Length: 216
Image (cartoon, rainbow, N blue to C red; front, side, top):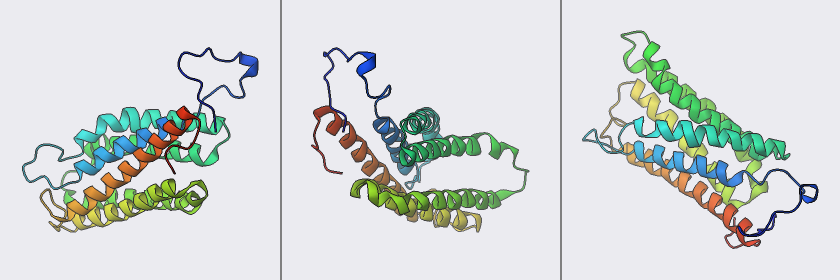
């Protein structure tokens, strides 16, 4: 664990630094966590068509923090030799960018008359990321219970998204704007983000105090 030096203490000379970069884990985890929490809120039932309803509230955060910042954190993690964190941050950073482009740019290119069938494509997108998440879930137990919990919840979230968009494609209203099933999807995704936020908070706090203050 890196030892906190305090904001007022002069940094060591360059030749004494063991590494050029600090751990990118806090930025990566927070980028994932905050964007995921907003995505969870956007999946909650929205009978009035206002508030957090719709993915439009996710796009800005997905591009800036969940996407770009998390992707950059992954690059730093790989440079520091952390394959697990680097691959995860770059992967999910790319996910948020792809998610935003898919729903804002490429859906405009769908031929007229496609109708609800476009949701099958979104379901397939969620299925692929479910498999990606499974890869990290298999390896997460080595990194503590909290991070393992994040990947367990995220894996479940993608399963629910596959079910949701497959259901929408078939014409079911169960997951419509005011569908009660959206409570399960939205709350589960929100909890995923909250647990990731806790892991990010623990990472920064334990580094800052130079000891394990928050368990992970």
